[in-house]
Length: 225
Image 1 (cartoon, rainbow, N blue to C red):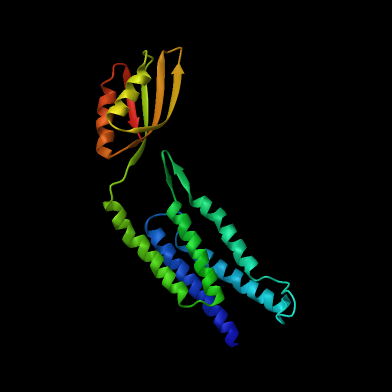
Image 2 (cartoon, rainbow, N blue to C red):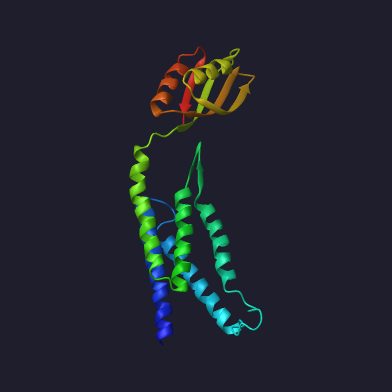
């Protein structure tokens, strides 16, 4: 009876701690929020409890020969399997990528569930507080840091000779680093579409660049994403 109560306590603790991390993601409007993190932590806890019982039922605990059953294999597969769920949370949004923090939260929620399942009652809450504290406090630190801005510059223009070269010169003058360029020509209408993936120092630099590109002869439309 005491063992059953202890196992139930482990499952409840895993649910609470995983949900606590998911609550922060829920507040920030992420798809993997409160319920997802709770279930990940709860499932991980159940997996490790089950693997322990597998070892007790079928493993050789006499230590006179190889154990036959490795209880750590199930936990290892949880670490691998959670990667697929984390990959689903990562979204490419134009020139940027979103969801990496949420994927990391799912990963840590699974680790906390494993810790609860094995009975690490002090370590699991400590890691939870450390994770939530990092999410809340370090976000404020990140907002104060000077960061580069990655943008995709799209230009619709008349098909004029060396139009692409003129824009690339403006990019160099604004000290922006060019990663990739896409050119699309409409021969019938004599129009050209250009797309540049760049790294700009600040948002102000992007606004300045936008004004210069608009001033080029033949440019009809410019968009910075």
